[in-house]
Length: 370
Image (cartoon, rainbow, N blue to C red; front, side):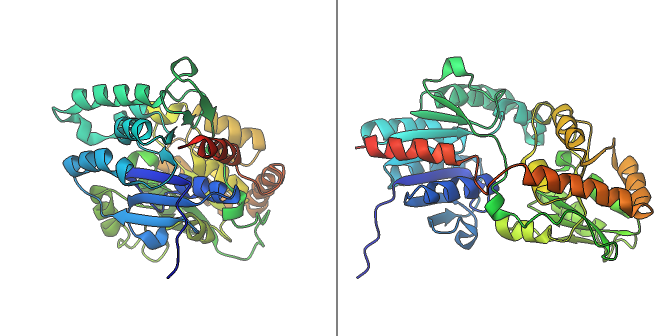
């Protein structure tokens, strides 16, 4: 009979698929630090992080998710609980206290700002959900370690006993090597990798390629029901049929293999409160893969892309389409921007992750757990 070692860390999420990229990067760093990891989350367990013990359930409605947020922290076996959803924090705080465990709360987005991107909050329950979110974000500051994705993400340092900023930088071990430039012969190809919610620019990427007949587009990521229906209908229309492919949700390493050999990464996010102050992970990852970046005019993304000399700023699908048509006629310019992206990637140094500091802190916490 085989004996399974007790996990050092349990990653608990009631809202994220186990194929989630940040979750994969966290687990990879924890395992590099020698920790045994289990994951409780959603989706297909086969798409979970390599080397972790993965337990999953299917997505459910609001009330079942609320029940899971209460129960799942108590079902976790690890000496350290790591939560990546705000709704699991209250129960996890109690479980950690009574069971003598340690709690790490990863607040990897500005959840209050992100609520502006959720259409269902226009319903009557919207104000109550905002108040509840504000409360649990404050509670996350009472964890043994509170992790945030950027300096501006709450809870603020004054609300935390111990706060660690772990930006959404890429884990280079999960990405294909930057090629630097195209060979001038391969078909021009753009990629969009990430959530295909409308505000995140998936539709604009499709419409841009529709206006640029010399280009192909690969979309990788999940889509809400309404957006999935739109995509399925849109991709059958003659102007994009055969040129735009939707691969659905993929684990990070498989997702980024789709980017291999592409030329451009698309990030045409809307100007929402959540996106205005953020740099999407995909922008770092596009650059790390040696892809030139086509971005909407969000201040911090513009600063990154133009500072690296590795892309263009456009305002809307029509402008993006014009740019792609121009690039089809000026491949040397495209190659120049791709080489700049490859240079940025090389300057990031050895293939280590921004999550390794987090893993080192978790090692210490695991040693202190009961």
